[in-house]
Image 1 (tube, one colour):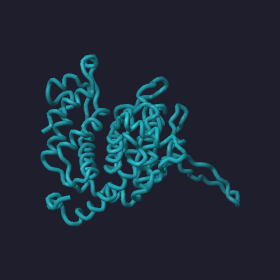
Image 2 (cartoon, rainbow, N blue to C red):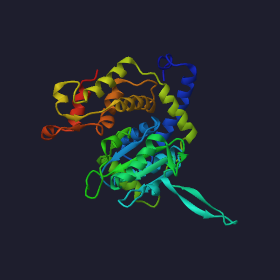
Image 3 (tube, rainbow, N blue to C red):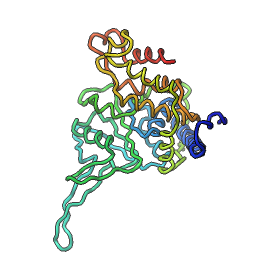
Length: 332
């Protein structure tokens, strides 16, 4: 880290940044010792949490999505819970419910029993298999960071993050998330197959007598301090303009006609907010104190791909990834 990096930032922020960079470096090393060949996925998941958001992991079974969430929970010192979403899952199964209890004096009263959502890191496995009612209960809590039962408010732990998974293949018996609910996720993280060398390492290191366990690199208080620092990092005018241009150009009534004509609906202001926070978090995660245009380009797809859709006529001509690539090529 050079003095030119620190010059625009007051001393207190610079000192916080030194601690944060050390914590993040240790966290990345600890995660990398357990998760092999998914560097981009690990980076995007870490960016999601550092930015204080929620992530949607999309990938076929067997790509270590569950292992990644467990490893993140252990490494970041977060209390972690996992819920397997099924069609018969009820909101109370996630949020919790009141039970009637009888005291020694035969008096009766209700007691609230907290559900698995009262965790610092919740894995919502195959979220699209639950009914819309159950999905809505979870997503409302994600947005508001509290739940209400029988008119009484119960605050969720701090920090509170949801990493949900979704299988892109089997769609029978599923309830796709509505667009308004997809917008609650800071990033959509596509999990792809590992390369040959990484898969070889998986074979050798996970099928033997011993396996590597995740180690804790920081605790919840240190994580929240880092999250506060992310929001204090300066963002240059060029980066702000690039974010605005990118998001506004992805809408059907704005931007270049060759892109807008294919878009049925596009990202709203929340997408720009997500991209601003995510670029700051990525900068810090890679050892820098201010985001660059490279951060905007790297995070354009994770921020935009679940926040826009093609119109009917365009579905045979192009795809969302192709449109995002064209938008990214215009940055700078």
